Length: 604
Image (cartoon, rainbow, N blue to C red):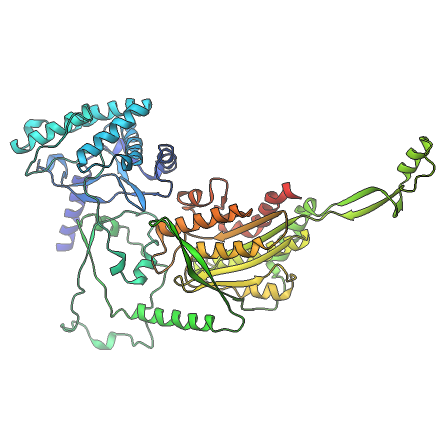
């Protein structure tokens, strides 16, 4: 009974909190692409991704249940990582106004950093004046939004007397931006103003106080909830005493069950995000007794030691870009390169032989062509040249020969493959991401070998900046053979994705080649990520800097991804024409060689 009443109260509270016009609602997911383009067109920071805004506690006068919940609101703001917009807007009865509010908030957040003021209201008015002056289309939308917002807000007589002066000043600031120098004080605060950004941003937990395992998982959010929430650090509750209300015999022994932490979190509870929205501040604590983390760290340490001390390991240092300091940290990452582990017989798998034959037929027109060289002193007799010279009376000519030679493609390609632990994810009951990557490498290598192109294959993973691992599957000097196929088959998912360091090392290898066209291909299934704070914007900016550095050296980096959310960050890293998003990951093996052939067709 108590649980039923609690659920009923929760649904009632959520309905009161919404209190909008469901028939005219607009969602952030529907407008994400257009808003991202608008944000950058208004000179917004291109490194920011688009994310949902949290439900923030707001100091507002109590207007009763008929006016919804004015004490909580989704207000837009931007921070170093993302542009946060309301995940749903249903404030106005007309759908057009809700859509225009998304546009207005996006443009306001784009120009607001250049109009920072000590006073929140002055900064909002200054940014508003700039937009109204510069963009006529937004000025018309703003007039409609102000009219709709004033009509939505309750009359002044419904507010406490002490709050009416502040509300009157807010309305004047909306109608005449720049006319209000200071908002009057009010013990009740004021009603949320959706046309302005949040006055106080939610404070995230300090990275220095977070466990490194939590840092590693910070970028692995559920796709349906990407909000930032306020939090504070708390001490973990004591667990040294308590009453057992179950039989100890029912507990599994540690030899039968151990809660080992895993990067893939399978949690289908869709109410967790809504429950988090009910909390003004989420308390976080560090539990040093978590056996799962201890076991995982011991396993990682064992793998790290085995890798770094293995025979044939070469260690080099590469820099890393720190976007907050705007400088390159020299020799910041340690890269260990070793020959990839071998597995299998080295024969082409049976399920790939059919696609291999089809690809050979499709790639036939890209094969090196035979070129005829005329007017040679030796070689085959050129009958046409002899007839032409005789008709001109040139009987003493001896350069009436022709030679045939095959024109080689002047191309060098380095394939860099992400085999971090996320590639262990399943696509179907019998197929995982790493399986698709192995099949893609095999067909890709077979295709480039038939085209007689110079190519190399490398995999990469990482565990913090001191341990970035490069697996050599095939170098430029090595011939494609059964050993290469065995190394491809031995590629296994492990650790994290420090993409910038791997790209810099791959650029150094590719820059040593003398071909006219040097292509650096990257295959990945997600964003840059590592367990020492290399995530979010930090990882994206470092990777972007590595891409720009590669282009300055005359290389052509290109990314092929199966991450369906790649459109929110890859255009900033590789450019609009520098990546390819594959909607169906299982098609990668057959699409990759053809994509490569089309990319290199102008350089035959």
